[in-house]
Amino acid sequence: MDRDELIFREYKTYCEQKENFIDRNFKTNKFYMAAIVVLVFAMIYTGNIIFLNKITATLIFAFFGVSVSAMWWMNVDSYNTLIKIKYANVIEKIEEKLPVKPFTDEYEGIEEFRSNKVFMFSDIQKIIAAISALFFFAVCVSEITPIVIILFEKMMDLVIKVKNIF
Image 1 (cartoon, helix red, strand yellow):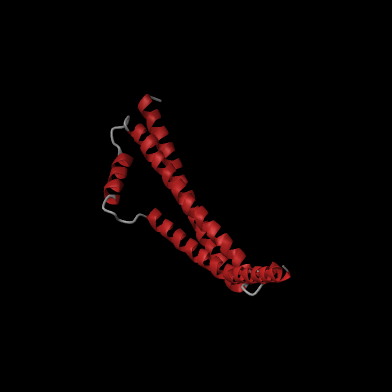
Image 2 (spheres, helix red, strand yellow; image 1 turned 60 degrees about the vertical axis):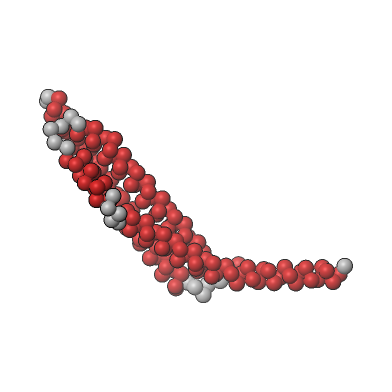
């Protein structure tokens, strides 16, 4: 096996690994989408369940929803960074030793396309993660507000009682 064939095999292997990595990214995004849908349905069907001192199942699931949405956002960022590293730092360097540079050309095309301010798939994923986080956060606020009001009223009653004692 000569040097050029060895370089090509390494290039081919690395490209296959990159594609597997991208497939894993899509599977991860499906997981997060499913988790968010499950949490929404869980909030809908367990909304009447109340735990300690007015803490509802809806509040708990909404809290988990905010957490899952934040993890999804971070995961999208991580995958994008790693994919860019695989393109720019590894595949492009290997392509310098090859007669053609398909991934380098593709990456340049994507960067040119992206500079026109067109949304990419990862941007859409981030928007969905942000919207779901805001939704779950709004549910958390709506569930916590009555608890805070009750605690505030109890504190005021206690302050009044203490004030009347002295």
